[in-house]
Length: 84
Image (cartoon, rainbow, N blue to C red; front, side):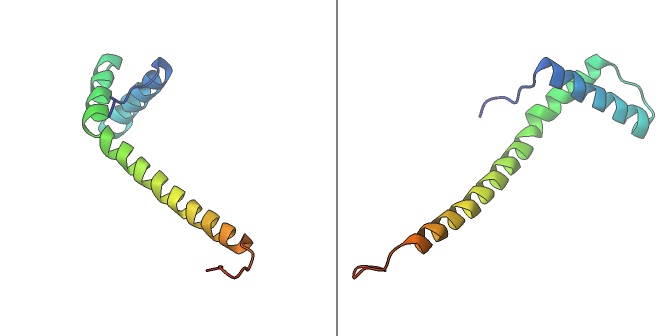
């Protein structure tokens, strides 16, 4: 799996959220640099768990939709001597 990477704009937005969290919840101020280090840590160490969960959820949705497609195709089948 490739490393999780964010655009500059995404990275700045996430770092602002980290800084805001520290200010509001922990009553501590951290700079952009420290917030960036935290982001790198979480992206590298915890990000894969979220990434995998997203893949599992996408796979479950796809499987469900494919079952619906298979049922719709079966409903279109014409009766013949060799039908199921």
